[in-house]
Image (cartoon, rainbow, N blue to C red):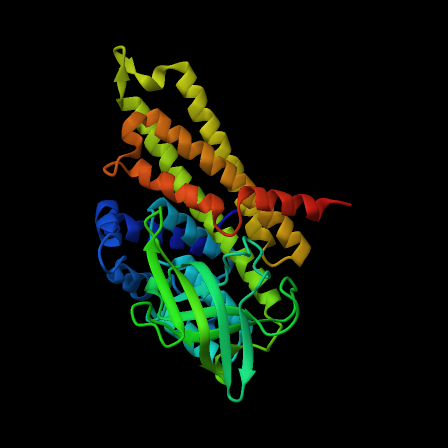
Length: 382
């Protein structure tokens, strides 16, 4: 597999790494996530106005740069390396991905706002009884005159407290677990001032991000809120979630690169019995194992990135293989780095603990290791 980056792609990596190295301080970021705002709006504006990465993977006709999966991977990996909490994946990969595939004037207008940095999206898809099966939908939408009426509950809607717009999946026909009959609806959103028929419980997650549980009770939306055609949203959802998994897998690689580098550096400095602990052979073996897990993850991410535009079955196999490989590595590298740092590995003052929490969250985001292992087995069964 030839994965040589072009000059433009290398420049993109350098630009993102340089911006984050100069502007994204981990200590300042952790203070921001614990504030009322929960993030750094100035950083998001910088992503849009200085770097242009919010539109790097979006079409040129909405103000983007027309990049593809490789540009997505480069950006996500650098964001992971700096442990960025701002909602890049939820807005640019998931939200914009759904809008791009749905089409229409409303979707195009919102895509332009995303590129400009003035809009952020959250996808209300997971339900209390659905697990990772996003076509298992109990939330319903029924047509009443010129309105859609939505009833149901969504859980762990990541980035909802930061969102200006919400995309809701709901069943408009069919049985609960059918892939057909699923529709998407777009609405303006403010978690602090929910409209009638919407109840929101927001919280901070273990990895210092934000999410919400949302209940809809006879929530009315205009007919124009429907994205695409009624009942045909599942292919768009499936393809968009595949992109999102590839993106967070690349983000995990960025996290793991940083964690491994910090652990190796610590092992060179920390002394025990009069010598650096990095000189102990058993610890050298552990760090080599961490390196091997990282390299396998990089290869799996490359395969996933190469497959995001493949046929659905081929894409699903590559995406699940990457998720399993990266999740396994994230757990091993995260736990090993904490162990090698000793008790201080989980302190607020040290970066390792924060990276470990994010790697733990990624392990379960968009489907757990067990879920994707079972899916891969089913897809490869004769």
